[in-house]
Length: 107
Image (tube, rainbow, N blue to C red; front, side, top):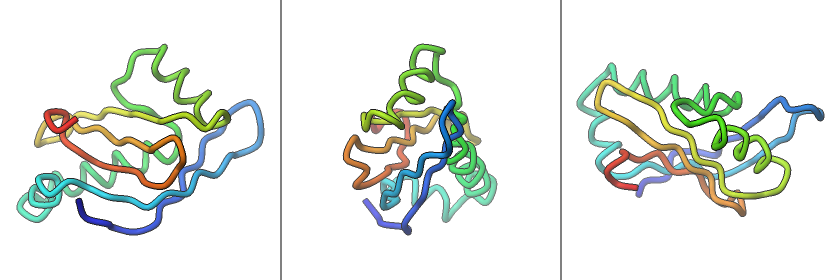
């Protein structure tokens, strides 16, 4: 995996904004696809913006609610988005040590 930068995730819930800070990583196949496909690079940027605003993408309502609760409880956060290269997951670990972007088939 490749480290990209430090990311701060914010989510509006019933309480004031909660900050989650984690290092951002991506798998090598995602990195290669970004380098080869400008549209996919834009898709990843858009997905990360959605993720950091609490839009969990193509998840069922139960999973979206679990993610909302995980912000407060410190559980793992998982979101899914469709892109020009296929479905991706963005996952932040329970301890907020890192967030990973990967293709669905790498999950």
